[in-house]
Amino acid sequence: MVKKLMDRQEQMHKQLIEMLEKKEEERIIREEAWKQQEVERARRDVELRAEETSRNLALIAFLENLLGEDFQIPKSSEVTSVVKDEGEVHGDIRSDPCNRRWPKSEVQALVSVRTCLDHKFLKGAKGSVWEEVADGLGKMGYIRTAKKCKEKWENINKYYKRTIDSGKTRPKNYRSCPYFHELDSLYKKGLLNQGAGNCVKIETENKNVDPEE
DNA sequence: TGGTCTAGAGATGCTGTTCT
DNA sequence: AGAACAGCATCTCTAGACCA
Image (tube, rainbow, N blue to C red; front, side, top):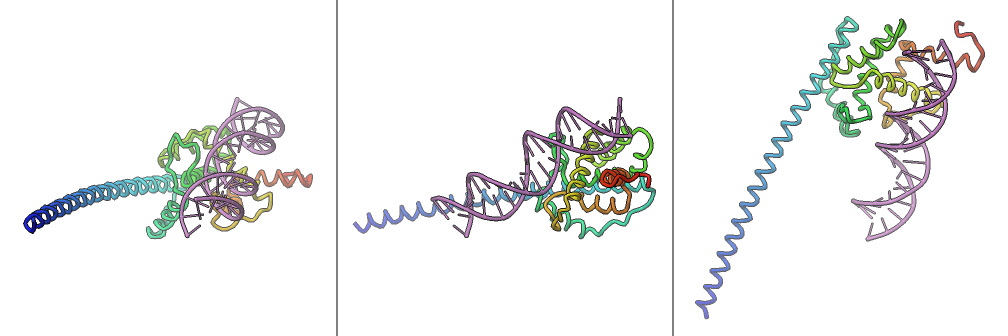
């Protein structure tokens, strides 16, 4: 009976060892797969960063070209912190022809390009200038038609004016309308011919005053 | 305490109308 | 004819209620 008991114990011990070895092998396989995923993820991160950098450089080059002057580029730490914040809070979607909505970065690019070409909107047919705006965005990697650019511009201005006219105060860092502060400063500086014109129009409608005055 | 649902407000796109 | 504007539908987000 003792011999039988010892054999039985021996057998169970062998089974235990085999099971432990099997579990260890599975753990190593899982670990390898995880490492592989991490490497792949890191590689994608690098690619996205490179893409973002080249897009930013294209934007800077385009704006420098238009304005004929060099920009002061913010320190990388400042930029990365902003990008990080935006990415975490809003999950910014890169420009995608299938995506109807305009990502924050794309709206800001539109505002920048449209503002730079503002002087061209003062004279003659505007259709071709919207083509230029669409081209400018295209160079930055945002594919939109001239019509879409024009529509978006009208919509953001419409919403901006509606919000301002309603007299609502907007909390700092409100979840959307990233372009609000930019439009704000543009209207204040009087850089926006469209906005300025509309302001006069609204005023005159209310007070029966000659726009020329 | 965390997950799900819902109402309401904000934000946006599309389309028709008016204006220049 | 093209630009500007207005209205409406739809999408998105968030706070609060409710439940397991």
